[in-house]
Length: 265
Image (cartoon, rainbow, N blue to C red; front, side, top):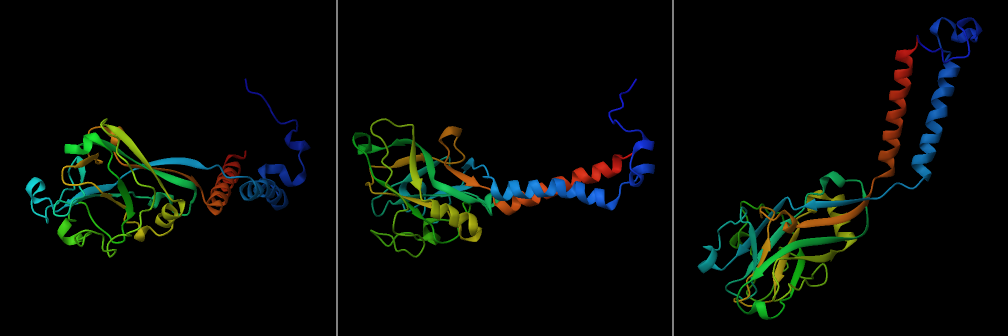
């Protein structure tokens, strides 16, 4: 036995609603009653910001340390460790990139946090900390083809500025000593992350520069590292584009109205 939820019989309905019909005026009123509040809510009510953590989609290290890692034109995109060495003739630079294309149209709130696992450091690095600076990369690269030879980040003792911004994007990272296996954090300016989101073609990621000497081989976890918690990540808070929310709300209203028409009896 079912329940009759409507207090009206068919004979008690207004004439325009008899014979399973709904007047244009009522249909329009129903639509307006839904659309107006939805638009008001999406335009004038705060849109919730959402936190996101993105794991690096590309990383590698480029090096001129031929004794340990082979010729300077060797690729290291599959390596599970990223090496950072500061002495000329042995210099090594980790490269890290994050795919933010899924956040296109969103707005970043506050600075982002770059994190990477510091695994260990060789030689005298275990006795003191070594400064590592983080720089914006200016040119495109691919982890399976980039090398020290074709990227050429270094003119001997300093960056040339052709391939990367010589000014660090944040305060230096200082790997702890003598304790290894820590996750290091650095603040990445909101403006840089927003730039990457707004202009995906200009997002070439970050490069790390060690100030240490040859005996100070700083080793960081890559995205291939078995310790998932140590892999490079970028964490930030983003607010969806208001216009997108309006379109989603209107699409939902359209689906509801369509279902009502299809299920009328």
